[in-house]
Length: 407
Image 1 (cartoon, rainbow, N blue to C red):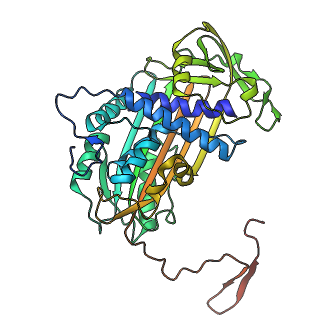
Image 2: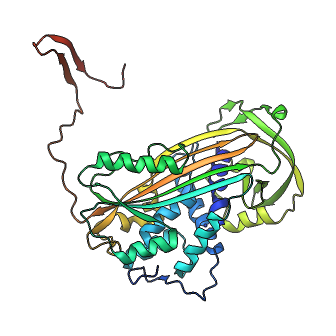
């Protein structure tokens, strides 16, 4: 559902467009000063451009699937890693993340303040950023100070290297609490193998439309999927919305209560409906700002989407590959930090007559210099037997498993 994918991304981008000094920061990240008049908007523009690039790359990889992405959460978690990157690694990350030419802690603080200021009647937006570090590893104090100032991220020690099962449970509990139970399982012990640090950013949004859709005006209509299949989802219907047109795109702006958060539903031209084309940031600005289409009505499907994915390959395709390999430099985090070993995001979104409930959590894992090999792991990856027996040796059950997926 291409429009649904754009809605999913842009409903959270609306929040991101609004979202410690250290000698260890990347060269482009300048310390905050009291006199600095920081502006969050360049970071919102960067997150928008990055999000559209990432969504386009994801679409080209899987053009017939619904896609749900939180650029704000992804940019925050990767931004936390960026503050510990150096040299070519920092430059590659800055380019892929579309960061401003000069990244200042004052600007990051302004972005964080803008996100936390969105709460009000009808809108709840919570963000929780956290550093999870193995207690056996040193973490540069200057790096932690920078994260605390720029992202309001605290540090928690968990046994990532020695007991990844316990670490995963603690991380998942924290993420579930931060997302009001929407994201219950972000990581598992296998994902944490070899990681010394995990940087997480959890985002939760519950926003009520400025004008709610009437339930009596919700009814089924035909929708043609990317594969050409015709389905009949329930559509919301309403009127009085701002319409803009630019670059072959038609945008409808749907404000939430309070006026600080909005959704922009973007419809491509009929000829581009099956492609993975994304609007540029200038087109997006024109669509949402020109109002040349005046006001009009909307018919939009109700959606309920969930996604879970590893973004390492997609980020590499956007030019961040050095951060995942042996040439990576994250010594700003710790002399023991090696490379990014995990980029995982889970997200969920519901659009209904009342409004939008969405949540996302991103985990960026940083490996240690030497990744320990698994000890004495027996992998049952071919047909095997199971015997259930009693203390007297009586065989209660004997099983041969040849296909665990076949019940």
